Image (spheres, rainbow, N blue to C red):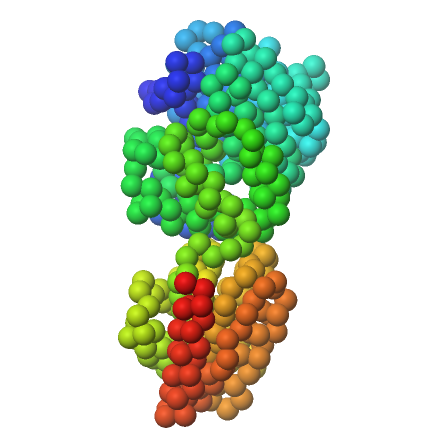
Length: 403
Ligand code: FEO
């Protein structure tokens, strides 16, 4: 049975939710599920904006057939060629033999790589700023390469001022009946997943996101319709500000997150002591994460949120404790920049983890490493506690300067 949402008199949400998928991209845990948004514009030319993942094909088709009410589908706009949004292209081509696919040159190159369909006579290739008239609606195409794949484009509907933004401005999380940002407690219930989605999926491409934001800067936008998560119809400035900060790799908050790996609790002990001291120094909302038991995508989201990071780990096989190494590799891969970092190492006979962590951090831009580095030999003692005290003062002073 169909389950659609009316967005305007002639535009409908026809997507669906997957609450059974454990790992998005077979990589990222999504305990709150995920939505695959698709939008149908009912005009002289009926036009679908992207399709959905294969997991919800049946729901999707029911939504489309219900909304079309017996009409055919004229256009399918492919803003993004990742399979979570195009798994149903072939199915639609079969159901609607007159339907034309609208994309750019890269879109069609990717379609041919992924699928073996006969596209002869069924494509409309658009270039940057091209328009497509649907009747009373007109789509203008704005290319956004690498947000998050090279073929990505956004489509701006001029008459109703709606931006179909592809992956941009999306979030993990299934839509629980409420479609709009102002129908949910976004800050409490959605922001952590929106941040985790951005930082892990698009985080590497901050420069390209900045380019896209600049292109959109002069455009009046009433609604943002992303491919995942809520549709934005209010407080667009809030969302655009988050994207601006995240894509400039500026911290969202002047805040401290402590990340530790600990084999027997001694490195964790040092982190707890440091956090307690920071709290005594007036710091609020301190976050502590065990890198061994917290998925790295959640750790990355925290890295994007916080200005001050503490990395604490044992030396392991003369190297960095593997779970911490994994986090550092992801930070580098996702282009993390502009953070103040403190280092705590542990080692019972040859501690060298801090030096190696510093070497990796030196490969990232704008990383300021606070002194002193704390070395623990097996377990905190009076010596390491006094260094930890100095580090606490250093963090407090740095936070005060940036506050
Ligand atoms: Fe939701 Fe880049 O696909």
